[in-house]
Image (cartoon, rainbow, N blue to C red; front, side, top):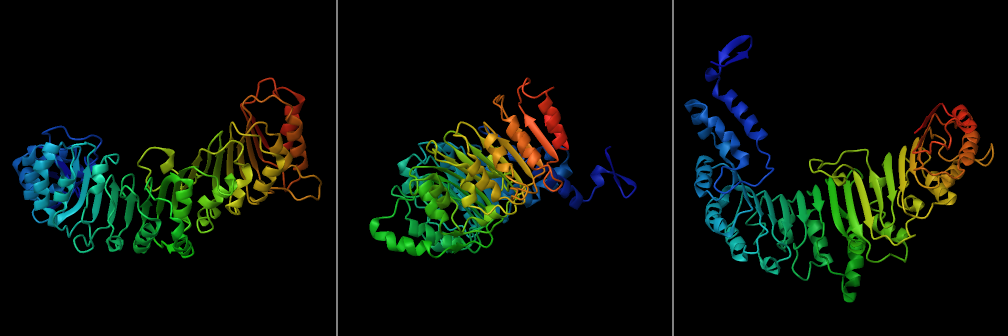
Length: 507
């Protein structure tokens, strides 16, 4: 007989109080609630594998079958008897329902069961990418009010034009508790009052009618949701350009910012023109997790800097002004800014997009357009202490561009650079006289990746270190990475470098 030690006494498991067993069962149920795969036909859903606990003994079976909380998470499968059992044993408790990957035949059986329990559905997830899913099925699913509904997620094949005609009939009257809404392939509710209590809003491909949602209407929706909204995702939502006759209304909207006092995260994946229009009306907290991916369709004022200023307007810049660590990456056709110092709110999903507080990624950048110092025009960088710069496949930054960037970072302490050649950087860091101001006077750690570069940049590095060799400007650590073996190792120059820094690392 299994024993459990409680307060120094050994107690048989079968004698444990019901309350304690329920806590243990709840832990097991929670641990098995991940859904890495869809349930197979006729099987008990993976999320309910804890039902094996009922096979241990009659007492455990009776406890679990009599506890409604174990039957409120319902993955609908082709086995309708299982669904009916969950609905019956959950009593009058609110339920969370998932209809994921079901065939049209299974849906025809499942939807009436869901509709019958509509008054106590707390969350509903519907995902199907089958072309046989008809608008009639969805309309049937939302034919009656769902007064307990707090979370709704629908994802259909957004390429199917038929789904765009579906009217979910969402309204503040029929769905008064709706807090979370995620739509792909089905149009968003038109009634602005639906969004008044919204905490999470995700609108993706196909979540607007074929002709899109007008910018003024989207602004009204966001303004209605702003007081409570915590998370926004507007990736790939279709917003047509405003007609020439609507320019006055557009100017009025952009002159009155929408304030989001509780916003935690903002995600957007769009073209630069649409993104700039939307971001231009948002007033978000400086601590917001800001993830922006855009492709350039048209340069603003004919320059990348003008485009970047549009993507990070004055009302958005506080998210960068408070950063203490930034990484800038420039490749042949891309430009990105990252704040890697804070883990993202949604880090359970893989990929670096979710690992940074700020992530701005711009693609389709015309050759020779992005400059190293562009970021200095969209952020003050006064609090920046750590900066990483990666430049690959782009024109070499001049000493003047480095000078503009570094002069904006007076408190910088750590600089990690990968650019060829590094000569311009060393020139920018070199004070021209003993009395000349020193860029980044607090700089103590410099790391440079050379990637086998062999030209005579060493003399410029020596001049830089010699000019900064005073007690208040001396580097404490210098790291030279991917250095050609024959370049410095064993030479007189390596000994000179060691005399100018406290710690030299060559690799």
